[in-house]
Image (cartoon, rainbow, N blue to C red; front, side):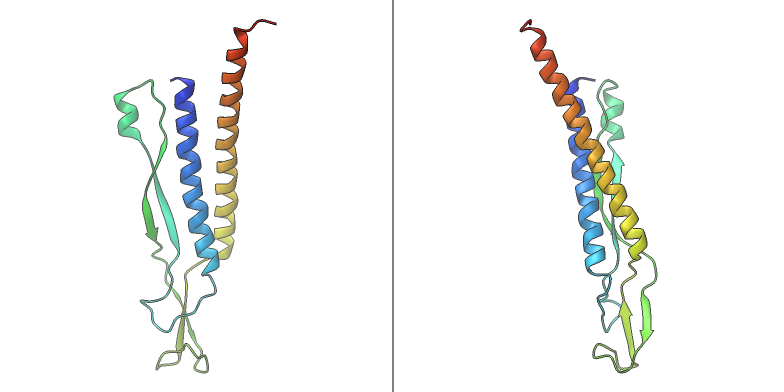
Length: 140
């Protein structure tokens, strides 16, 4: 595996963590939204990642990056609350809140932030290695 592959792998990791941070931010932003119907209520979203295993198995010397396969909605039940005086209540007096757990979202955000930071450090270290290798030919 060459150092150029390390930069590609770090790049895919940063891209994947960026998607993760964006979905987490979307979940947090919609955590307190209210709807009058079950179908229109915001549902927590999570990205699905996959290692590019097939490409890596074809070339054993190549590194394996991360691929974002898509974003899925959570299957967790929505929060249904009886609040007949609420302006968004349905005809039976219920309001529907998203299935976003703020504590889990904050933990996910911190994890994604640290993973992004780690990928930046890998890219930065690789860049410094390139620079030092180029200086070898200059002599001192």
